[in-house]
Image 1 (tube, rainbow, N blue to C red):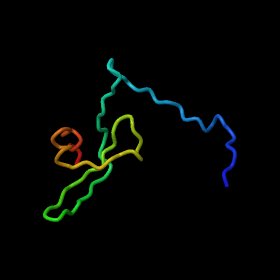
Image 2 (cartoon, rainbow, N blue to C red):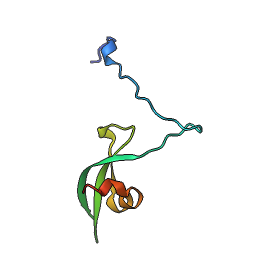
Image 3 (cartoon, rainbow, N blue to C red):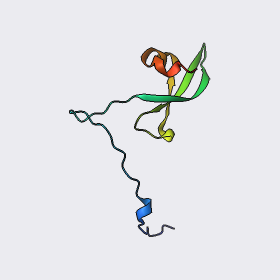
Image 4 (cartoon, rainbow, N blue to C red):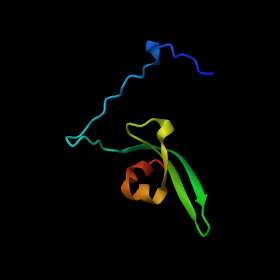
Length: 80
């Protein structure tokens, strides 16, 4: 059974500032690598990295191929 929602000011999430370009887009940049894993396909193994992107929360981090991320964002791999 659904209940009526009682509003509470503590439930409001404050907006985070976002740098928006003149054409109303924003730049996506990876911040860090959260996790690694190997995905086993039929004929090969693909190395994946879980990347945390700027302006996104940890829950929104996505898996990308390591080769692609190394090619585009080599600085992420200096510590690893």
